[in-house]
Length: 268
Ligand code: SAM
Image (tube, rainbow, N blue to C red; front, side, top):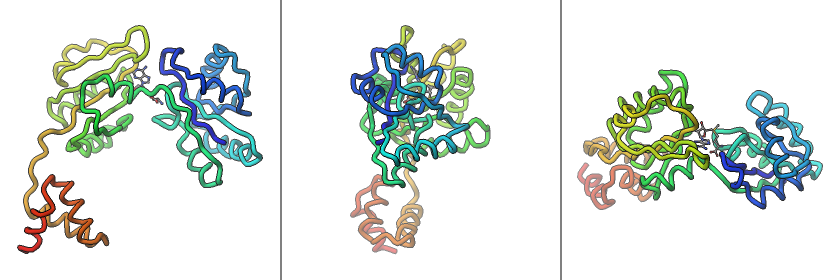
């Protein structure tokens, strides 16, 4: 069994009973930063052997881990904080394990994105986790432009030294929307800063600590011209979708009824 095991994002009390038991029972713990994880393990009196598993060594270490899993041993993956495989190493190993017929098991726990979302006050019914924006200017701009029409709440991770620049770019691409900065979650200086992007840029001196940035979805998606709706519908048909599914997808995309699309299709 390959376990994907959550660890606290600040407050050690967020370690679960199950995580402690699993980390004690497995044959090996694959950790993003062994020094950091060793401190956590010492705190909970866990003495399981550790192996480094980070972005730089993941290809070679993944092979070793797979070999051990194939012999029937169990391994737990942990990252520095929160859920492995969420903006952290682990996802590739899960894919390899699945391909090799090995079972994967989540050990849930703390996660910065969802902890921030539930206290944000923004719409939680539908949301999009966008993780870290690319560092290169051109890629970042394209990344944000693609997200600018998303109607759901968007969740970003960002490092404190890039936060102001990120918010300024967000303002340019998204317009002055409502955002929430969730800072130092579960830690002593936890706080939620709410307001428009421009207000928060003005009030943010030197951002310190860890931040989750949550942005209200686009509430003003411009109505699309009729041709676009039909183009979209026809493109789906060309891609092999049947008429019913193409209508359903088009209706969803343009927020109109299927009957409306039907009458437009008939009219052409
Ligand atoms: N795997 C982690 C998870 O499940 O949340 C995320 C790891 S990612 C490398 C680190 C980023 O998560 C930080 O830059 C920050 O954006 C966010 N983060 C992690 N811990 C946080 C905390 N205590 N408060 C606010 N944001 C946090």
